Image (cartoon, rainbow, N blue to C red; front, side):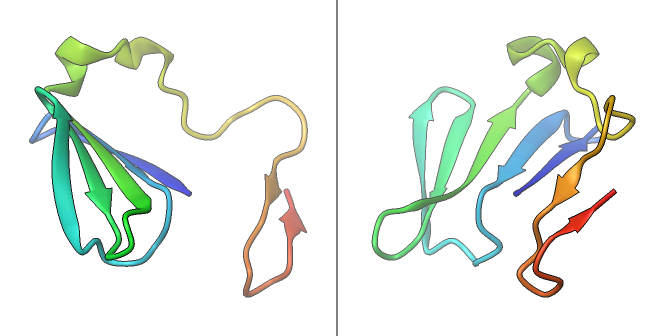
Amino acid sequence: MNIAYFKDMDSLYIEISAENPDHAWEAHEGIVLNLSADGRVVGIEIEKASLATNLDILKIGDFPGQIEIIDKKTSGTTH
């Protein structure tokens, strides 16, 4: 799972699965669900994120304690 904020587009994207979406559905104005061919949610896009969410609490990295990164390629690494 990855979370990215694109400041130039004011868009927040939550990638649930790395697969390419088959289609998208606007669940609510400015909230787009990217779906796989079989209907699973693979990503969530929040348009105009600075208006729809509190980006002040968006924290990337620098978490207290250890963070476990689960990666199928490395079978789990703790940082």
